[in-house]
Image 1 (cartoon, rainbow, N blue to C red):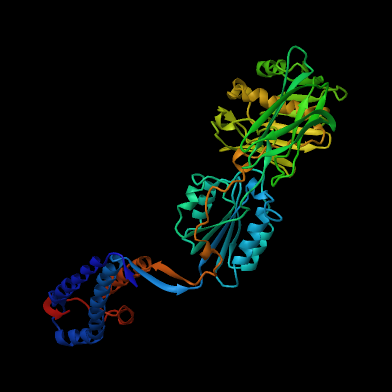
Image 2: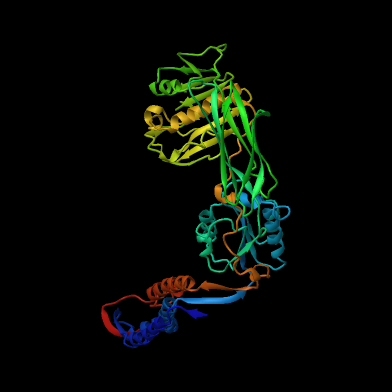
Length: 559
């Protein structure tokens, strides 16, 4: 046992003060006794109480001494340490896009999880597995080594970066210091990004991956309208050599499998080349840029982009006129909208927009602002989360949107929450076979959403979702983060010799002052009970009530 503040043991000197107080206590008390048969009554009372009083005096002294000693010991902050088998072993696996590199077989991620599973050995203890992706997740936390291994083997890498600060925060939620922390990564992130984890004591970093990775990737793929012709576009594709040696190959761009552009490239280490070319599109098209090159990272060798030509999209604004909706729809030249009090079952609209009105059950896509079926109004909700992947929300910075009041939206089995706030869901979508139901929990008049650049971006995504040409099964493939494509190692292994060794039993430390404090409180209750009943055994006195009655005479009775 260790004492954090041993000087506090000087408080034990107070036991002498307790002994002095007990020595100086009054020996006699004044009581009224009957003058008749005085000594017979006193002798009878004393015979009933003498033994009990001696016991109480001894117990009170013992309790007082124990309270002083325990308080002094608690103030010294004792720590009890013993060797145990309940060590916590944490394995953190990098799940960022660069872990998909194939410079080791089959890829860096599979090698990392296999090595992590093999390093666990057969020793006992508790295990925790953290998958460090864009949103780090705790895959397992418990005593079973086999379940921890199974959680590792079932993990899948992501196509984005890793949030190391969030991983460190997740590790801190364990409420204890793990005996071992092993980070399995390819080291492609800068040390500054890993700083929250590298600051942990006892961290072991195991780096996987080849020594000379080779990667050529697409760094940009975009298109915009060009000139007065609404069908004419200009496309851009950029290619970069992330390797330390020369690279050459072919870049090809196709629209729905029809070739649009082909170019040969030859790039030195670190060089980048951009290509622009005209494209004429009369309707929706899925443009694909592809590199004909063999490297260690396939994720950035093919990228898809949706481009929608000028096809008329019919929109019905149902209910009272709304200036914000009318103004934003005029921005899109392909939109033909009508303001209607109601929409009949045979009206051929791609999108029906309702403002503070209930939606209908007819086929087609509907956009509803502040539906009456939602919850009660909540003042000034704050947006705390939004889906970074869904087309309706991925290009909008929702945290900057200010809402005066909103209705939290109901969530069903087929409903997907896209924007979450302190009041509840604010934007949801329900995909159906014949369209989609998009609900927004606030009115445009009760927020600044309509005054932000994000509003036309959101409406453009709604229009693409509503038009049958925009509902073709094409999934845009976002580019991986620039730091993931380089594949270069930026950190070195830390304590590599210790990572594969079976962790030994560790010292387990527990503070003793909490149980000492509880014991002192219990002794205080006991001391109060003894002091209250110090005059005689309460059980016997109740049975002999009336054996001692006060009189008019006075005398000294020993205590």
